[in-house]
Image (cartoon, rainbow, N blue to C red; front, side, top):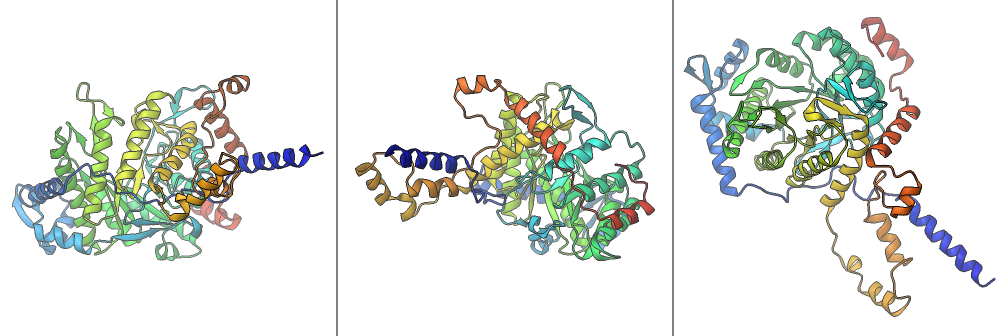
Length: 505
């Protein structure tokens, strides 16, 4: 009888240890900025070169409407169809640009505050292939995949916002593609979302869909729950007319935007890393000037995405040391200028869920977070150098992001955490720390417990089927897709949308 309470107490302790923490020990929005690959002089030199490029070389292929607006704002005609952006115009723009703003979720609890040193992982990409859950091989992405990816990530705590990660290749018409993509986002998640508009004339009708979701005409613009991804600057150093038209139209509807520069080192930008950063910074600053000339202080994420090619073959390279340091440096530069930063990391070149996948995703995403990238795009689910998206990758990356957030949180040093009295009590008492009040408190407060990583003994692992990470992730993804079928549209909203648009599920 004397052993019963002891056994009972042990069972209770084991049960408590096995239970998930009551409070997430490291939620999204942790603080970055400690990794600084550039010195203060480096940043000044890169910035000075970027200003010189904008003022002396200038931007080419400027659409007429934008040309007139820039000239009125103080830009100069350099001849040969190029327009110069003087230092004063650029620096005044930086001073008056939006520094911090909210990306709204339709569920207010899921809204995120962009800017400062807050770090959030999310999605991006336009994969034309999906890694099939059944065959383990790539096939063309479909609209069904887009719906499935959207509802899968809706359950993942560490994906802070969702941008359509794949292109529905079975919807060939550009307008229908934009419409069905927007509908999939509205139906399957209440997080902040993002999409792209192929052409400016697609914006007005699709905003009608957003107004239906928001509750009436003009209501979406008052608190937009979607941002757009636009690349109005095409490397090297020129504007793209269709994308610029989309910028004007999105500003008209108060749609926040990520203006993305996606230069490629050695192809559309210098192969030298410093030269690359100077040109890419100049190009993203050109987008910032454009947006603020049209609408001063408009919410724009300064999305300077350094991309790399393998100079031996010309193939895009989403992983590697150069991608790691360039995106970290980009985040550092953007934060130095006080602008809400966006970078692209965790876009592995690996096709399978393997060691290459883990190394490339872990290195690039951790460095970008440590450098303080506010929004880290492409960081969930992307494989095959952005040509592929994977359901298994989404759930594995969610665990990876949690570990990164935990690393960013750091180590709290206080009299309580140093625990002199607790150390003395354990050593002079039971001789260990298992079961102590301090240990239980730390277990709930300080430790992240991954959902998919295997921490069992080899024998236990073998007896359970000797599954690798890919197999466990496949099982987890299937379970989510089987059970999670949200519909964030009311029957009335869905009916109104279908009366206007030819949407597909």
